[in-house]
Length: 258
Image 1 (cartoon, rainbow, N blue to C red):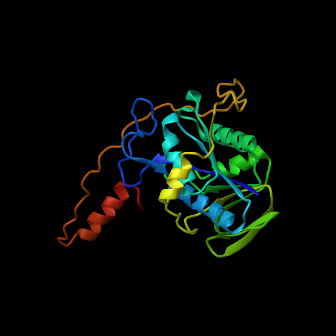
Image 2 (spheres, one colour):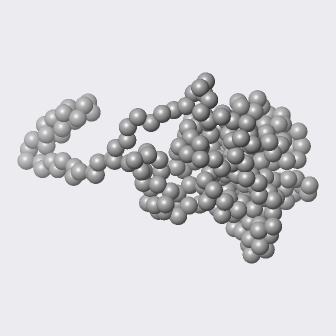
């Protein structure tokens, strides 16, 4: 079986997160850059299956800038057999539609039986990429899984709802996304880090995938304006002098909260 795992480089959640007021894009130099934790959990699902099923091939696929290669290599150090990274200047600021199209093309180029992704990234938090990738590939998808069981010809999992949980299943090939309910990822050991340097790492461009990011019939999102979020102001303090209830009601009415 060949399992492709979608991973993404994101700003470290423990660091500062800033937007460039010139481009509207995330300032990725404002903090350390790491593989998104949910992507690492998705990789752990694939690696755990590979540990129990010899002959399984695990491939990490990412779309990022050229200098993200060192981050993506962590997936190799964790145990992935190879990695594919799509790098192209035309992808700077790509919207969800273009991102899904490119990732699907990279997955198809690589070949797959199962694609595993996180349910949403910690930077964009779009939460739609796995389903959009499946749509582009023309295969079924099972999203937001809290548990996963992979078989040779199908994948099954649990999805939690507001009132109950449901069991979903789909034949392969398919795309699934997992939530943080899945186990934490393993840490790369020294042997894995050294082995990662010799593992296949393929870099692709849009031309390699036959994608035109500027095609006239392509629907792309365009950012019109951006402004820095204003600093938080001190709240209103109500001192009870016998009319606190009236002051509170007036405050709620003025702010259209009642």
